[in-house]
Image (cartoon, rainbow, N blue to C red; front, side):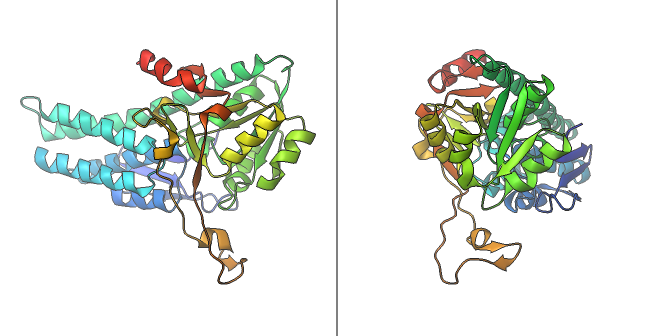
Length: 353
């Protein structure tokens, strides 16, 4: 059984505080949208799918425990809460897409004759709950499509995968995206080994991905980010599989900083480079990755470790949380609807809607 980043029942939302992992596993209650936005901003919960799920469920919990008394107040509250949640971490598109769809749903339902506020509240809550259920189902499909595609490569009886950041159950509602592909390969008995990067400066790889791999007894080794090139050359890496926070129309992909350099290294070594992401991470309104807003994090995340200063006082810091990988470096984008070349993705997913 995989780890749970979110525990939800009607009126109750608990999130696993990922800042405390791997040493302590503590779930914290989220009682409303303000608290949900803060948990996202503080990175107690992270990963593009999980951000959207926690954001929407935090709103659902508040509607359950403190419902607005009329339709106008409900619409205003939902819109303002969703805008707050979008702003918590802007690079990942999943929260904005979910918010836009929820707003459209509420607007449509509220415009129907005789719409009652309690029925509207129930509809919004059910919409948020369905988002979580769909994410788990989509992740299993991503894992199976990705594993099958990688195993179709000639000579791939067993594969060795390198991955970056955390894309497993801790970043989603369950199973994971890139780590879901790794799980599916392992379940098929076709995974020889996994190399996971530490993913500085927030160490999502060493704290979270390594934790999930050990928990599920998947054969794995942790490396520093600067070891990726020599690992590809010396350890017979078959494929690199990463997640995504936003995939735009031409296939350019924003993901955790360090992804871009892995794609360049994979290209040099002739290793397939895959992006695993649900269609909810795709933003076809943006033509290229040049328009993606890249979140910049506080400098102390780079200069300090566990509250202890390790960098020279007075040094300047640039700490972007993400980078953009150009589409020409990407072998395939793995979605719940199949695996597509970057240039094919928009048409394929649009046709499938």
